[in-house]
Length: 329
Ligand SMILES: Cc1cc2nc3c(=O)[nH]c(=O)nc-3n(C[C@H](O)[C@H](O)[C@H](O)COP(=O)(O)OP(=O)(O)OC[C@H]3O[C@@H](n4cnc5c(N)ncnc54)[C@H](O)[C@@H]3O)c2cc1C
Image (cartoon, rainbow, N blue to C red):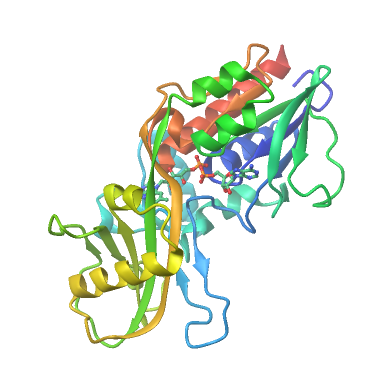
């Protein structure tokens, strides 16, 4: 790059954000990543139970259960992860399906290595600061001062990106509003005893709230006991019940799931629901990134071109390429 070390802020440490960050850092930019949660992965998520008790230490891949290694650029990335031991094929989920090893968010651990990531740091707005950009943090005490930066890449789900961009570039915010995303209530359930269920169940009667039941035990590199299921409610039920208290959603989904796997009498070790307000894109934008007129404010993420990890990867890469060529001019 010809500019003296461009300073770039990236919002989000999921697939799109870390793909962009890795490429930019490797090209010589000074990259800082802001992530509101405590770890990497975004919707390639793994929950580790921290509460003392019989469930302590259990892990659930409660976001994407697996990824499809398509298209070819994403396949090459996944094959490299497999060579490093961070991914493993899981044919139960499809011919090109892979999972993170030993957990889904491990898929992003190699990309994150050595990067400056500020965890538990939620960005509340992005504003112009002369020729640069300045981020405001929700908790102003969350860490060292954020200097102004030369470019910002926002990788939050579309509605959150739109909110972040309102103060920065109203045209971009409105463009992000064109994408639609569906919610997904997800149940993490562990039970004691033998249950004879296939690795993935995806056929349910019309009255069931459930779309998929995934047995995490069957994924490569996971413990076989105790039984651990991740249950995705279907989009219709998730939308209609979006504001249920978590305990109530967990109770309703637990009943439906135990009925579906023939475990009505099983002893429950752990049951907790997680609401993904923006789980999957149902109407992507159709372009790999959105960009401000001067090219220094970029929106990226799965919702630009698809609804999966491969789309997030491609969009993250496109964001990095756009920023690199901007600073080479
Ligand atoms: C239940 C479920 C099932 C799925 N099933 C599949 C599947 O089978 N196959 C598949 O390929 N994909 C699946 N997906 C989708 C896949 O997980 C996503 O497409 C992909 O992970 C999106 O990556 P991303 O980087 O675009 O966004 P995200 O992973 O959402 O990353 C965005 C990051 O930004 C952070 N963030 C947001 N706002 C702020 C802020 N203001 N400040 C700081 N940080 C912020 C978030 O915490 C998050 O870490 C599924 C997702 C869910 C939820």
